[in-house]
Length: 142
Image (tube, rainbow, N blue to C red; front, side, top):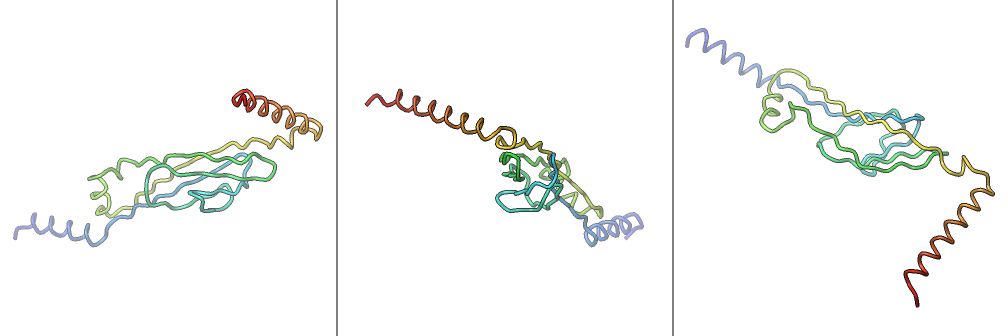
């Protein structure tokens, strides 16, 4: 075996013996901070918060904070190039760590009851109830 083949064999065996690591995390921040954060209905903590994940794709995100409207929406965690099929195999054998942090920021809206007086809330609720009643009656003539 010549020196070049021996060096190649040594490099390959080191790469296999000391594979790299792929770290995936989602970081959620909010304004204001301190909201309870849920990913796919699992509470992960209060914002700012970080959680590990295994798969790329769409996640169900929910934030709750007293005095603010609850937020509920889907967000996508997209894969970086080293996670693409084929490339991901090479990334796992390279003796290096790959870090990918998906960053999502949310702005929470103050709850309606914190912005209006009790009289304004009652008037608003009554107006919306009457509009809904009129809509139901017009769609069902009997």
